[in-house]
Length: 218
Image 1 (cartoon, rainbow, N blue to C red):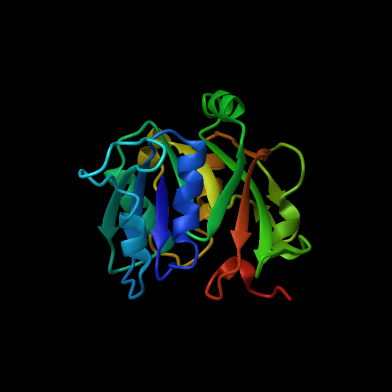
Image 2: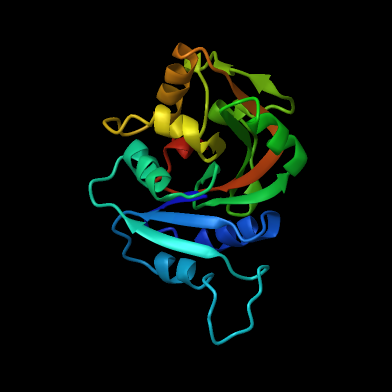
């Protein structure tokens, strides 16, 4: 799992805990961009303390990779280069996993290079109406989702799963400051491959003042 972080102390512990609750001993790579809060200390608390009895339910492999020259794509590519697993999840530090159909995900990742899930927007503990960007997260499966709102293919990296092999073959654009996921979706489509959106994978996407996804929302 790749979690990009900058001063996410409010939610990063909840995010990692939700990974532990849905995956057994996950590999978590925190790509950290100059954080000045307690987020990294919180992330490190999920590492196993050798003085305690081992428990796969309470601890996991958490690695911190620092990045100074940040872009969304560069951060993910750096995480991929440090990952050892066959499949990779890109998860926002302010997202908390609610549901994963493991069998469904496994089956679909054998067919699609990328599968991304549903986001439920939560503002100060309250679920808000899924307007604007949130209207894409419908209650059905959609292959190669197209956004009429944006006029292009729609993929969102707050909660997405990839075959590692495809990310090595088609890395993210490192020169853009946002929407690296949509640009990548176009690259995938140009290579004659498809991606899948599914509502069988669900996260709560909590409000963050610096998050592009939240801009324009009441």
